Image (cartoon, rainbow, N blue to C red):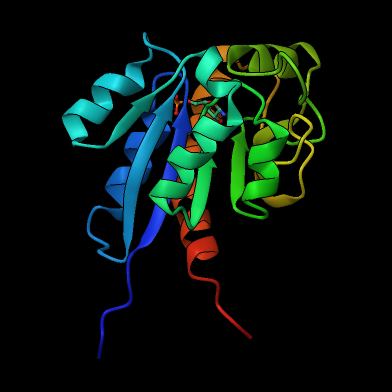
Length: 196
Ligand code: GRF
């Protein structure tokens, strides 16, 4: 039987890229999924070294390129994405990209949206705010990207209970563990939806 063409996954990252590495390792044995590219807006990002080490195609861009959606659009269209996953990407996706790939751009947020979301809520800022608010739980939210920060439809959430004694760094570690456990399988379920 003719092997179906592989599904193309595109990842966006601005930081360390531990989620990019985790996703890459998850799909390494699955020939039906290939990471067609990692897009990065930060020349100092740790994800760049990870892409070199993992042999991932890397496309870096600055604000000028990012704000010329036609350029980014032609790059993305050329990579024929089945799914675009933001894995720690800090810029807002421009409207033309959201409309060009309807229902195909997802993001992972390190908190239980709608709480602790929105502009400026990223990385340790989120975990500090959760600890300061004495929350009894934190977790992750995987959601569709729309034109507003962190307000797209929720796809998946996972929680972890907090005792109230954790530092923001402890919460970050607990939330990262949820990201590594759940982001790849959620991506897989979106690439290969089970009908019925
Ligand atoms: C993760 O906490 C993710 O939830 C958020 O950005 C961070 C990315 O971390 N969107 P890394 O660059 O994958 O290590």
